[in-house]
Length: 243
Ligand SMILES: [Zn+2]
Image 1 (cartoon, rainbow, N blue to C red):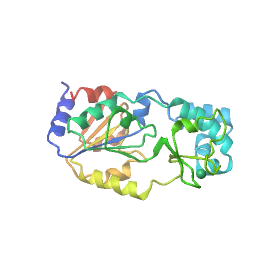
Image 2: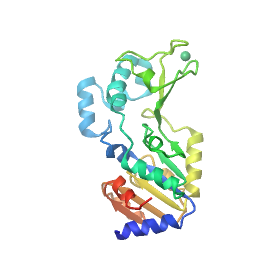
Image 3: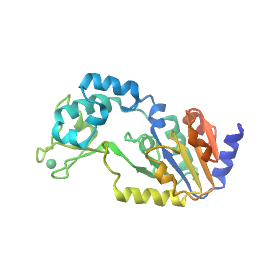
Image 4: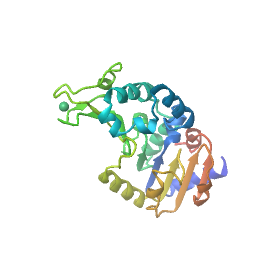
């Protein structure tokens, strides 16, 4: 066993509260390329005439729903990734009593679909959709309309996927739960993300535990603030822990 894996395993075995933060590296593990990644953003702008940062916003959803949904169905819904190797490894850790909470930016419920039970979704989920007017909930199947705008069966309003669009704030109750969970953690795992992450860096400040471990495919200068850094495919690394 690699030395860092042994150190991490030891930290996990001695921790009474472990929290995992999952970032975009998890969807990448399953082959999904983020819409803001340069190679994909360029292609999206070429097809739709606007950048993903312009399209995936509430302004666009409100003012140009037809184009928003053309984009959403093709670029997001038709590419929902399967759970990643790391998602299954986290579920096994949770069942073994070695992981108490997962906090994720994943909008595809990869961790839940792999079996994780205690998950906080920071950016919502494509599987949850709701009519903004009457509050009726809809399944992801109701959102696949072959390019047509999904409309509420009750009141006719345009259904909204309950995912964070660019520029939207995380709900304050979710923010509070997240800081509380991180505050309780003795071990904090950053999986498929970095300490410098736009989303997570503010939350990591609430960590007062012993071991902060980064498990990521790519090295980042902020890694030196972590106690342990394990570079490589997060799923393969976590599986070596043997849970
Ligand atoms: Zn409605």
